[in-house]
Image 1: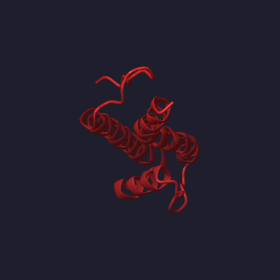
Image 2: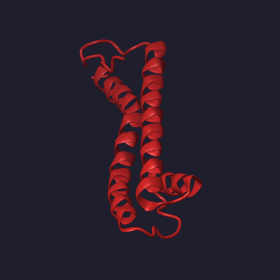
Image 3: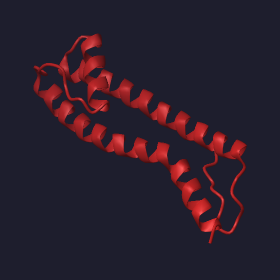
Image 4: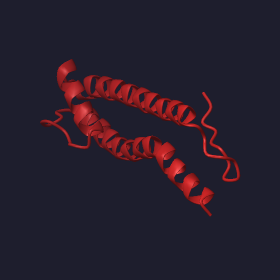
Length: 115
């Protein structure tokens, strides 16, 4: 899977290439979300001793930027929850950049072609 972009001296990529680029970025973002959600769910279940559905809800809420639902009862769960919250905040920024990159590149590339 190549994420190569055209150089500023090259012509603007055709719309079909742009659409494939956006699709690759979306697929990579979805893969990252799925893996992060699985790790979060497993962590809350293992360290927090939460039921699977509660672990899934907490991981989903943190990845979505909403915060935890309820209190985590164990010390290990609290440590995991803290680390996962830090990870989720950074992951949100990374996924946002990943999804915006093809659009920002295309706008900037078009702007430089007009010069």
